[in-house]
Image (cartoon, rainbow, N blue to C red; front, side, top):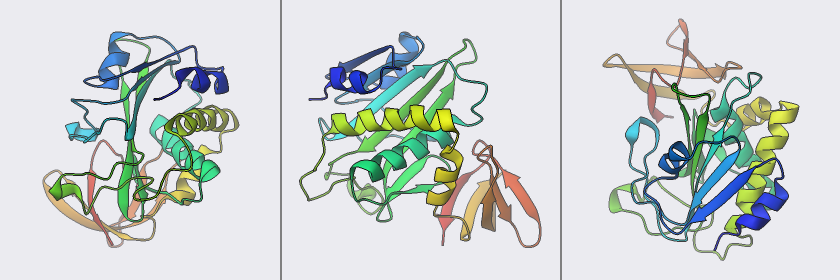
Length: 241
């Protein structure tokens, strides 16, 4: 079981936290109980969704499913970048694993997705909701996802607990937010820079080379002599070679 008391003890900046046995979605839990620095965790989600409404497969006790309700700081330009950097920093602090980031919000290990970040800005309030779904030691995936999805720990026995990783993720989140080094960490872990990428834009397939990132987390691509800056809300990467 996830130890919320230990997580909060290691993150005194968090005001409140809870763990549910099951939930439709921690994003929905956070939206229904808004408050600054409130953490919602569930052992299982039944209706989890990722970016663009994609379904997210969960398994009881085998993953980390959580959302943070937060009043955003005007100093932070991109919370997706910050959160992805915090996840990779936490994993590397506690393990020998070397995760990478697929622009803009997915964490990969050994060429398989192990985690995703979903940041929602609530226009009707002053809050954002930061959602994280991470496959901790899940090994059972639908057939169509087995070549794409993986876990932080597969066949081996995890040397750390989910509670330890959760606590470290939010410790890194707070630390990186304060010293503003998260963009450098994110960029250093991006595995698509220098690669050929394919994406859809306005019903057109575009092939380009990913050359850099802006400080706002936008992707700079070269489409054959034309430099273009694209945001995550405009396109979704289809392929990268």
